[in-house]
Amino acid sequence: MKKYGIMFFIVSLLLPLGLASCSESDDTFDEFADWQERNEAYFSGVYEQARNNADGTWKVIRNYSLEDTIPADYYDYIVVEVLKEGEGSGCPMYSDSVMVNYRGRLIPSASYADGYVFDESYQGEYNPETAMPSTFYVGEMVDGFATALQHMHIGDRWRVYIPYQLGYGTTGNGSSIPGYSTLIFDMELMAYFRAGTTPVPWGVAERRWTFE
Image 1: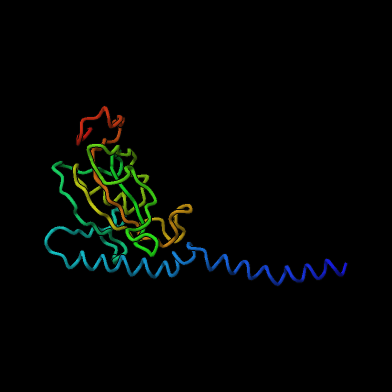
Image 2: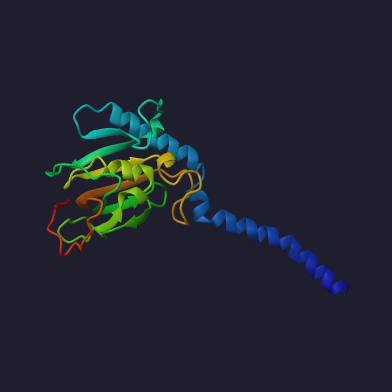
């Protein structure tokens, strides 16, 4: 009994040291330290940059679901950097389906200088001729993503900055998107389908078409 008691005592002393060592070497812990403050400061900076830019390469767009009569703060908007202007006319509506090439990432960090990529429809350097767009319903997207889509024309390629309030909020989404995350999407609208029209595979669809 005394032998086991001594062993238990030694193990109980070493266990906290082992746990502390794991915590200190855990990159995830350091990666997301002060995550809320960092994300709020990052988006606020991008928002101010867009507001001060007058050459048309930046847009500030109000959340589609927020009534015009309700006062808005900076986090009630998405920020758009226009990478390429499309030639299509008209925009998708909330009830439409869309075909989009996209890459979603978090804000830059120590481990990911360009931001951790949490989702994408293409890999490597973006090439619209070889990328296979994803098809989904506008209404099932987070508010920020849905807001962007409802202002895009076919062929528009945007870099969209979404505050966490219009993304996955304070809880995040799964293990790859922590709560309070600003979402950054490079996205190009390739086609859209009006409600009641069945989307077809990209290989069948004519490029950059609107399906009424």
